[in-house]
Length: 299
Image 1 (cartoon, rainbow, N blue to C red):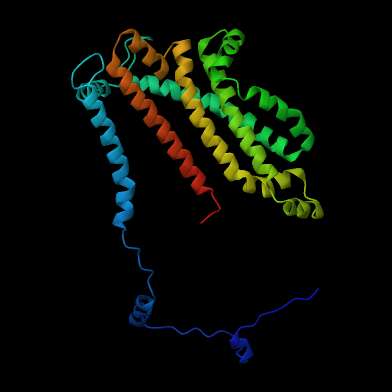
Image 2: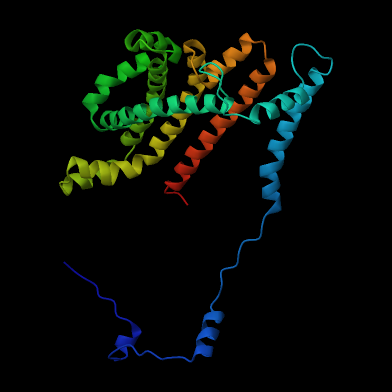
């Protein structure tokens, strides 16, 4: 084995030890001040405007078309009337007058709770299953046909099965979230494992690494971007499905609240709920994208 040792020029010059020189305080401050300071990038106003202006124009266009279509009156409320109803609604979003009369804040929190439980269970099952499918060809050939068969089924098609098994609306809704959230995580994780370069695994075999070392040190860092993409797709699907599931199961939740407002013919609250559902889904998407960027290995 050949080893290379690099020496500093001081050693070649025959110096025995590094020499430290104590500078006076004023000279030390001047030396620090003389160090080059990395200049801050100037604020690019064009980039800021391109991020802010198009979304605002799109929203203004939507409100303008809405106002134009409702200016002659009718059953569909105007933007001004909907805004007034929203201000009144969010003035006290957490009131509670019984199990069937609660503020929109409680309905959102109950829906998020169901989504969190179903999505969390799907992650606990789907991510390890994706690793197994991607890692072992036998498991992939055994499970892939089942995934191809069950994945296209509408999530609401699983709701009666949940009601039959659990005999209750709340666990049935959580079951529906679980079954619709698991597929993107399984598929994306398995694809990520299968795309790990074979050279990495060959090195692991040469070093005789254990399966746990292979998963934790090689597969997990490489698969993480794929896994986070599956998580992001799953949470969007879960939030999409919970509204429809709650419409059918009843109880407290944003989906049931929309259906209840329809029964009361309160179209203004239905429109408000549509915007609220979209904003909450957008926030969930942004949060997971931020997590994905934080764990990304790209610059």
